[in-house]
Length: 276
Figure 1 (cartoon, rainbow, N blue to C red):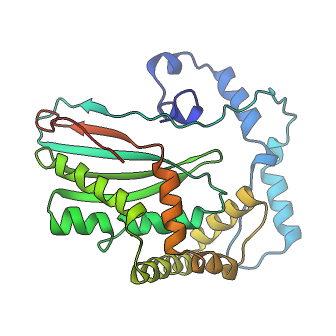
Figure 2: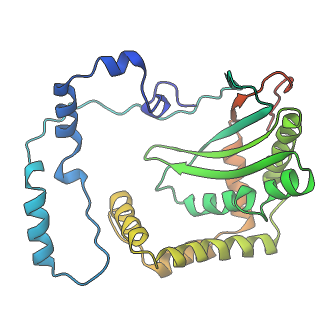
């Protein structure tokens, strides 16, 4: 999806790039990226004074306080590229297809990010989602199906992934196509909106009970927005999700089509046709 951008590179690299590394490259990478201005420390738990915390941090991270030379290279703009279908062959004897459908999405500070959370929840998160009901519960075409999202600084991805029998895979694609179009042409009911809102609210509140998740939330907010949103602010963002906003976002996301990647048995899947 992101040819020419760092996000489009394999995360494990390739044999040539790995062989080219040397200790100097690793040290230089650390110097450029693991620096005080790039680190946020979030503490949740027993009360600790600001002075004691500052003393602990400065003592433990003093070695990172080094002079850094910025290379001045400009980042490459993130532009999604539509790829109709990539298939990864397997040498194992299997009749299963593992699939992932990718749709170019929002960056992590986008004002409609909470609408994206709601759209994904309604589409494919949980047993009551549209995709699961149609393709697993009613049709029995897939063993598993879910939607998820990843947000980056310059863009993001909305993905639909799962596993099915290769013979029923065309039915899976047809069902996904129908439900993606329904996001545009079939508005969410008020009941669906309330279910999604309550699910997002529950996730937010329940995550506050876990100190680790609370610390991660605070660190992300400080890193992404340079401020901390109050719980009431975040609840207001959830309350502002409407069927019309979900539909408008779906129109924007689906206007560039989707990319499909499959792995497994390719003998029986026939022609791939995913038209949005």
